[in-house]
Image 1 (cartoon, chains in turn purple, green):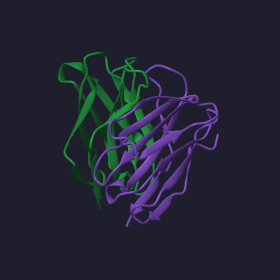
Image 2 (cartoon, rainbow over the protein chains, first blue to last red):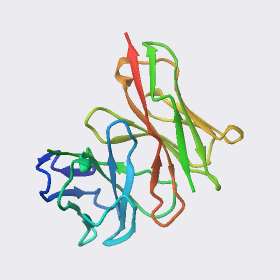
Image 3 (tube, helix red, strand yellow):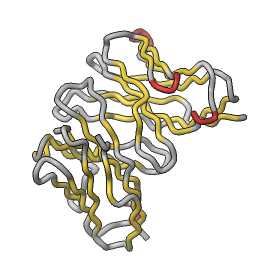
Image 4 (cartoon, rainbow over the protein chains, first blue to last red):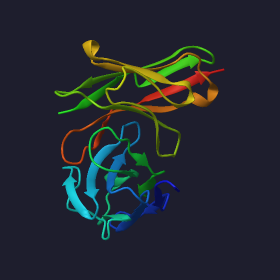
Length: 115
Length: 114
């Protein structure tokens, strides 16, 4: 068990460029979540996958954001036409099974800076 | 809908002193509550969780939390602070909708004074 890994750890991009982040969850985990965290705030939910199906999206997820989990394993989060307001830490988490009692395991995050 | 409120965005304690970080929840159903810790530029690490088995929950690194339904609280405590406890702490409640996603508080930054 190598934990949840995210790549890259840091990304600096110019406004208007597209960026893509990758998340590799813990191998047996069927649930995968993306969160966004800005300075001084708690993580905010963006979207959720169960296996390859994207089952829920937050209103925070504008149409410039898209996420995929093509084979129910790794996931990507793409931001098109980045804006300065997109600067944040993007966290991926995974968990196993259904129900509300299990904890989520978080990756170390990708810090995005839009200049 | 579920939510949590963390009282006090910054808490300072002396090394060896009691740590108390406050969290109140709002939930129309029995909540499942969690405390996570985050070190600078790192992800979140689970400290402990409440899943209705016992109201006093013990976690890692000497932390514990007590679920009090009458006060709708789930405060985090540690009897004696250590320098390594300096970090950001988040209380979270797990939703009961499809994804069971976590709803986080705004966090409490703990400073430990030597």
